[in-house]
Length: 431
Image (cartoon, rainbow, N blue to C red; front, top):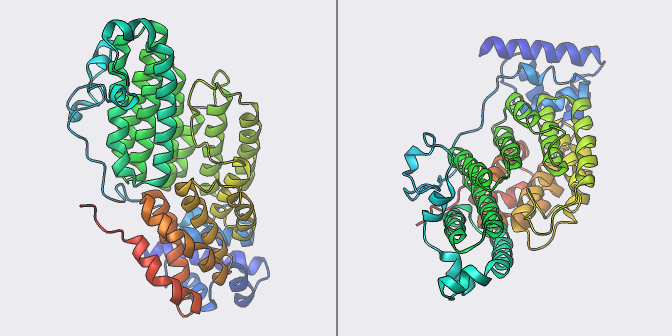
């Protein structure tokens, strides 16, 4: 570890001097004190990844300094993990998920009870249901999925996951009342519930459950003849790797979902994660190329109104938002803050989870740019939302913000916001 510190420090000093910058000038450009930078250069202090990225940007080092910082993956479980009820999506014990093959339609029918029938008020006899419930059932089930997505924006993920998994089971059960076409549509919707449950599991901090539920979604979709969701599963796994800070795995997984035969939306979302992976790696050029590709692909998307959209539906300008997101990872916080300010203004008021996610990153960009008073003003009104949605991934950026503000612990705005920030970082246990 000491040797790594010396190597990084020596290289930082060499690049700084080659750029003709004094410690005072360099400190002003990265918003760290001269004393802190001096300790890093002499090997007395370990550089963080965030600090290395700022230095790479300030010195045009193209990620070479960040590559010298030991990689530490994010913690596997960041909050209370989703606890499986003991019965898997296929009606099998939870511990057997990875050993069983994809479900048959009969297995899907047998899994769980038909709670959606209760939710939709369907009380017709089996004969009536088989004869004339298809269109109405699909319409109501799709509307219900939209409401569950909205619920996911407003609620702790651990409370939502069991509801979503039960709905996925119930839709499988309902296929016995329908013809083949309606049954396939219900299975596809069941797959979307399982995929969404995977995202909520990741938000709760349980990556293993997130991967398992996403794989369930793939199996269910395949039973209905949809093979594209398998590619989207790679996109979801790339996002898990991104939040773990693993650039290589993020890029590798996302590259598996850019095949030309896939729908533009899946390829566009994959390109976004490729851009985020390259940003983690410090490769500005590759990141911008992937962002351009993502923008073009998402503009080509012609969504089917009868099928729920994959990915978020609350970003009106995803290109600007994700570009700002990536610029922060690239060590360009001032540019990131400007774009995130613009994009966050367009977030719908009901999207509490997205308000918190992108707002916290916006505050982090301002803090990294040395705009401490503005950063505190941005994050303060977001903290109730952060606590309400209880997101493990949002808390990753909130922890980064807290570490950044610690360098300015005597600043009046930091002193004022610190108690609420600490409370948001340590949510009360669920009883």
